[in-house]
Image (cartoon, rainbow, N blue to C red; front, side, top):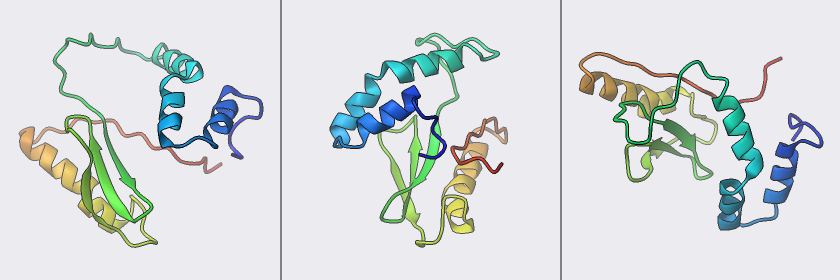
Length: 131
């Protein structure tokens, strides 16, 4: 927690979540006013307007995660659940060559084929600062 500001809402949220089980943690996050405020603050700084819930949009969230058993999971907002993309070595992370081949590169190739050669996406990473 070195990168979490002492006394911040995030520090309180993390400290409140640590002793909880998975279901209780999920409820805490789901009902967190601090996360809602942070989300609204970030959303209001954007340069575009959010689409209405009824709008038909082609963009969605995709995430690749390595679990504690070294499986690479693809979580795609268009699917009903996560997809197991294979097993990585203990020393491999989601940006290793094997993980890129099983995950991101495979996904991008599939999207390019379905989209007629057009790819549009944004990339976000959650990682410690390199400064």
